[in-house]
Image (tube, rainbow, N blue to C red; front, top):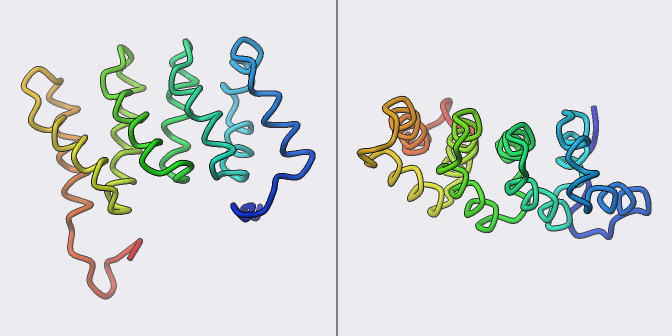
Length: 156
């Protein structure tokens, strides 16, 4: 079991070195394809790791973009800025990336991020979007809209 780093404390030397190693897009691409790299990015979290996530959203590799979106199902990173990056992934050419972005936006919608709810709503009513993606967006919104009651809540 790994503890999460407190987001208000400065990074340790090892954490700074790790994140600095992910600044060069060509060198970082191979590392960002590995789940263990993303586990460490999620552990570090906060705005420092958000910079890596933002670059990963624009990576050439669909695997990297998918991993970045999936990491956002468990970490907020930079809040609304992260949601904006995920919303941009809804128009990605790769179906797997779009699917991961919908899943992550569903988590943010459940955490009451209005911008995530709006992005999912726009996708749900977009006539040219694939039916499966429209359905997934609708289900994510329905999950976020479920009234929290004693015994069935997960984030409130």
